Length: 300
Image (cartoon, rainbow, N blue to C red; front, side, top):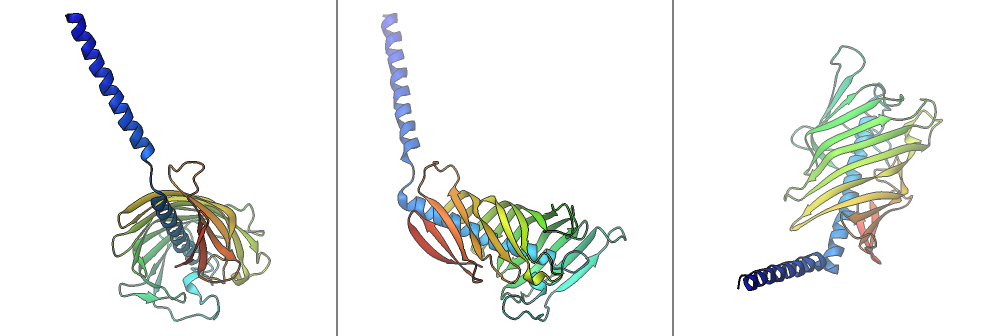
């Protein structure tokens, strides 16, 4: 009798284990629908493009503060693209030397609290705060930027942006590594983009001229992030498959491709977003291709 009870107990355990295994297998294989995958791919690609565009302009602003720390004449400090003339400033710049020495130097750009429209048409408020260890055109120089209540067109910008001059000489092509840590763009409705990035920038034109206006750079590297859009929450990874081309005289990246894929997606997934910045023309248009479909997007 005891033997029969033991057998029945063992049978019950095996049956329970089998049911749990089947349920577990079903969950693992349930996956997502094609529509959901397409939505996540598009959201990831668009989010990466937006973060790329916003933080790319921080490089220009940090480099262009003045000739003591960089090369004046870029970013918000100069009317770019068509006009090439200075525009009235609606921001203030404060320069501080904590040790009463040339470096380190801390530069704060304060756009106020009511909104400041720049030459690029964007409305900014809050502060950009950058500490420079040396003039950025010098090998080994670093500039670390943080943000204090900083908004661009009502998008709250957060994170740490660090530029390091990785060139071996200050007479040849300029080279920089740019790392964005804990970047975050938060929309008024609560949607957000989280972004971490490491890029390597190399000057390819304008090396022998003193003016920064003919400078052209290529950008390589990758990033990863997360987007919350309504009920959609997805993480992604991106890599630059064709170097991005950055012209100082243009507000947007003009060429290059970025491949973006959802985190934990299968290696052979068709749901890959390819962001194409164009053929070199200066405009705010890019295309996003996903599984044979192409979408036009407008860069911020």
